[in-house]
Length: 406
Image (cartoon, rainbow, N blue to C red):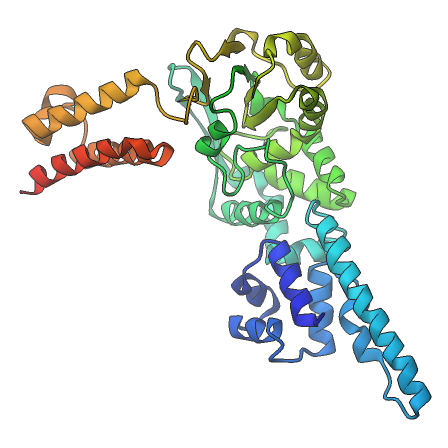
């Protein structure tokens, strides 16, 4: 196995593109490509940088460079034996060490962290020193009109949190942690529970405010980060002592903190053939075993955790009634409910019949036309995204737009 192959595996295992690695090491993407395809031979110093970046044992990349030139047939035999040993070591590294490494962050020094983030220590320290001025807080009503607090990171902190999110993508989160995860959506979440006999829905009360800084610190320690790294990452992802709603990192951090409960639920539910998933603060459990029979045991898991369940939102349904997960009906394939679809269809038919201007003047006189059309396109696009059977809404929308542009 060549160094190029090992570097490519380490890079992809860490969620980095060739552009990412090139930027971190101050070279071109083309150089990284040639290196991975064994068209270039890197210097010892360059290989040491890669080894440090990806926590690769240096000897894995440099051992073959340390072999002397054979002077006799006997020496050549020894060197051949060493080359076989080196090759075995490389395969063991790829087969075991990288696989293990992908599941945890394992950040052992600040130098390693800043290299992974692609940011200077001075830049990060400047943000930390002025942290309370690096974000804004505001309130806005939720769907029920209840005010909710949000925290919006400013530009520099936003840059750091985007990089931390990419770092967190390296963690091998279980499929049951769906919210905020790369490649996941409410559709993928709902699909896990579609067409099941029993479905249970739970809601965690005051979710983000209940994720205190200490929980975040403990979560990073569990990822085998050193104490100073855990403190630094906690400082950059929390505000006022908790994980705030609005930080770019909050969804993934919440998934990190939920791993302990996730493991306990897995042990409880798996023997009954039940599947579960978290979408941020929403927990859905489904299967062919009556979920009500485990309600007390599920409550006990949360009782001995930092989180409280909102009992008023707990719901158990079977396939004879409407089953939902995060706002989608899941009795068969995920979709919006019949009432939502009927209302959207009526809206599109009215738009086609009377025209956009007349419809807005009658129903939304204070709404900007461009904003309304953007919202409408988003709603129709979402319907098609969640279920291909909803293409009929896209056809109706196109009729409306064609009439508008005629």
